[in-house]
Length: 164
Ligand code: NI
Image 1 (tube, rainbow, N blue to C red):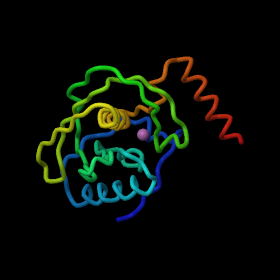
Image 2 (tube, rainbow, N blue to C red):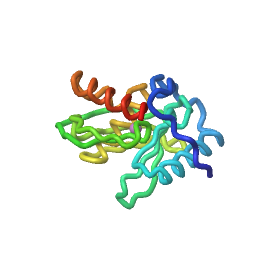
Image 3 (cartoon, rainbow, N blue to C red):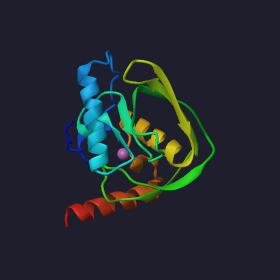
Image 4 (spheres, rainbow, N blue to C red):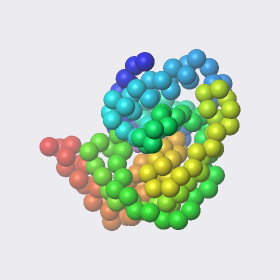
């Protein structure tokens, strides 16, 4: 396993729509292993393939619920419900957290590494991670979930920090 460099805000791959995995081969399995290692090292609760420079529809997560790390290949967001505001962060926009309102619960369906269909669902942190990682596969970042005024302020903060 290897720790991969995490792409950060400004990298165009984070703005690209990831393409489906055609075959779950050794390369995808190694990618998943490396993504899990990278997620734990960061540390984070979720990581999507574009964040390590791979434009494929794969994400991993571990919300510390004792079920261990899980990977989803070609996930689809099937259902969301409710509303929940959470102070959300992202490994690709490090050190920033913004209160973001999203549906509270989400259900994602995809494939595991053996090609079997899997469904993950949950509310609060689980629901949030599933939606956040789905966004990454669609070229979206948490900044896109802020309202216009908040986004402008957030971008200004990031720009000022980058200038030191
Ligand atoms: Ni993220």
